[in-house]
Length: 232
Ligand SMILES: [Zn+2]
Image (cartoon, rainbow, N blue to C red; front, side, top):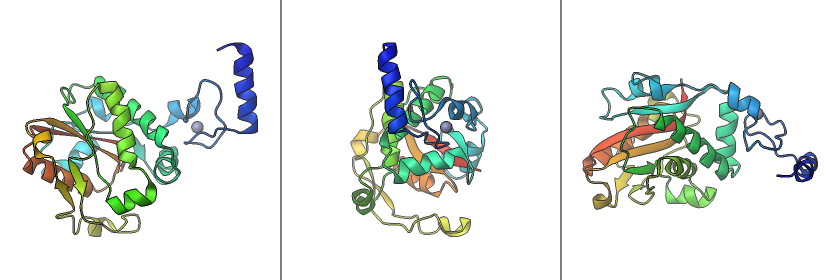
């Protein structure tokens, strides 16, 4: 881009500042949704290089899987929480795609996430989907798919029962009542395949576990798990 054009873009940015989804400071030419400072300073996990990571341990003895990873550490008040809030409640679907691409880049460097056949987002109940207008996990899968060159399927696994919002519940009660919440509708699409199941944030792991159980019942060949963040 020519210098004048770039100056014009920065000038427009001063009038209508694009704010970083991590730190809320204005972002400048060449930056996209996450400022350079945040890109360097957000707490990456490096889970993709460590098979015994915290996310994997969360699922040991609960569900069979190949690889499990989260891109970032989630803590209350950190930049990651801000990003996930923008993605979930402020309509920043492109941020989901960007974070998905960042996950995809890590997966390419890992030996555990080879030969993924199909990427599936953790589904949202249709009522909630109608209210929000988009499934943030689907946005993330789209970014991952671009990097890995894998198809995405958001119709094979659906959420058929509404669950109460988990935000204000304690850790124990979150695990309650996750039976018959998810259901597989396109059995043939899944059989024998290595599925990458994707969520925005993993806390107790109850949602991923419930989805995974249904996927295994449907005859998948393998399961891997990826999320933007892990609340440890
Ligand atoms: Zn920032």
